[in-house]
Length: 450
Image 1 (cartoon, rainbow, N blue to C red):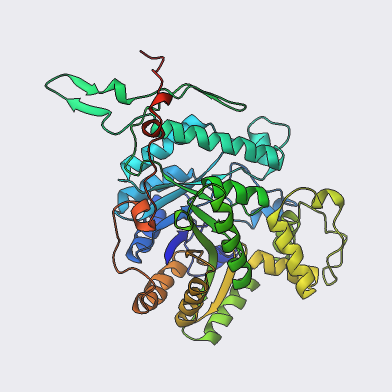
Image 2 (cartoon, helix red, strand yellow; image 1 turned 60 degrees about the vertical axis):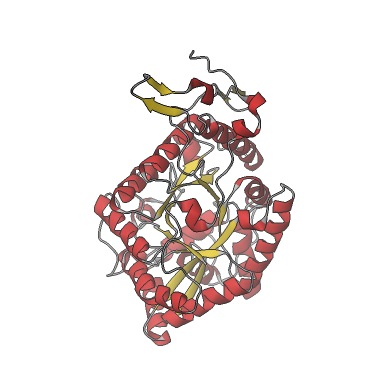
């Protein structure tokens, strides 16, 4: 199986930062992130994964905001520092197609791929928060369908830019005086609905050809986008059955784009709460959940449901009917929360605690053997190609997984004992994408710069 370490602040649990084994005030500390990278590499993880936003989720009041672990450095800067401290671990960072430009994103990820020796991955997001729009000078966030239409074109342009330097374009011949072979460098000349890009990129083709493309959208539109573009899907499922159905459906959708199942790794997020005994693990889970202030749990629930106002509802009563505007459009996270509420008939306070405690996916509580057996079962049943491990607190939770769970997975023949290659693609078992200008030489264009 494949494994990614989700470096969600100082823990995947929303109150993980308050735990005694979580790092103190570490989110602006390069050594903290480098140490996490080294721990994941010790455990032979395929990569580390950094989520990102370019704004803030709306919250009700300063008291709620104060209780959230909110600082976020630029993920590519952080990944570059991890690259300098490691040799094998993949480096996956988030960049928005809504609030970025293809040239900038293509150049930054190509640069990371070069300086890391072929370990870069791009988590493609379309962004979700209104505050992000306001930070970039827009009155409102783009509609869901419009964001994905822009994302499709964005990725197409990035691919062209990565291909604008062909193999052998860098000569660096001191005798002849030729540094490049201009015949192997092409303009992009893209003119689309959203972007106009001349090219070529200022960065030669990278060790991986293209950085690995990762995506996490679970809506119908997001799934279609992933089937066309993604090589890894970061997903979230409450049960093995929903995960099986999702993976099977994605394989069907891949065929529409003439892609094989092997070209896409589907990796559900898992939060492992590990104890030496099951009782100890359950105590740890209760300890973490008790650290969530009720006001933060309710605020989180309101946000996941489309920023509804639950202040007038009885916290010990059922979730009220949502207004029409909250139910409009595609929102897979909202739909999962509503399904949980209906399935288990939870009062608002308990529903809020549940969704806040499990913010990154399926939580497994038990011994290292329990965790390993669950992951193996999901893999054997066709529910996953691997997992995004979101430790409840960092660095302690990741260290426990590496020291206690990984050896069991290795002993049972479900995880590597050494890296297969030197690039993220090689370790994930993904092919190097062909250069589009090689596949269609007639598409080559002389750059306007000469």
